[in-house]
Length: 311
Image (cartoon, rainbow, N blue to C red; front, side):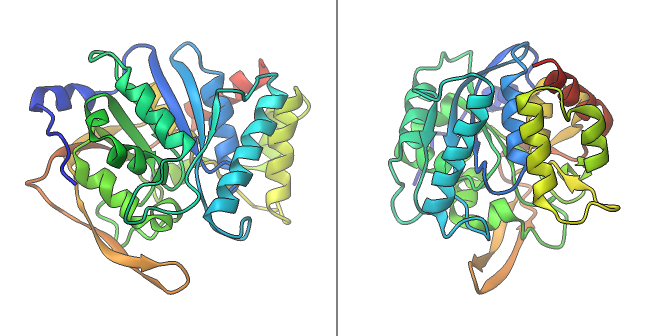
């Protein structure tokens, strides 16, 4: 697949952190664990900067699903449960994504087709931000269905580990390695939010959530209950709420320090059930992307908890 090559000055502009209000869609494997739920509500309750136009259900496979199709459907249902507690309708707003990981041909799922349509309708000076917090199957599929959307979007993805780490065997990335390669190789304006040592800093506890959000309103209680159910023993236990890092990047660049670097090559192979090894290889000759290298936990959670309290 050959993708359009963006002019250098346009790519540089698209890689700058957004200054004003932006249009965005959110691609999420919402039932995979408990961080997506926080990120979805955070995005929806940040209208001062984010105009969320659609939510896409992403596939996943773990002990909470029997396979990518089941994971995607459970994610769709979890999004609907969230919206119900926010008194929002899912009609025309929530779209089912891929039922399988990326194969020889992209799946023309409702999510991928909606993304293509929204992206192609975007004005040249008003790109659509595509925020992905699961396996990036739906986004890669949309790029393969209509490569021209590369001119119209900025992708922000939480997945993989820092480029210098000894491996990048991380859940979102290893779920669909071919889709991840599409994103790193395509030249799409891309903001990479790694997990270990970056988004992993976004830890919270049952005690903190009991103090800040429990009992405030139905959505706060829903998030608190999800957190409590996720782990049996909460003594000295902290849980990463990884996915809110992507929303924090869009809201305030000071919360997520980042830099522009050449897009690394994703090397190695991973097969579900049999494993493998994945790592990033430096490629200084390649197109630039932006990589987040740290997150400032306290101001991010202060903003998130304040917005949750005031729903």
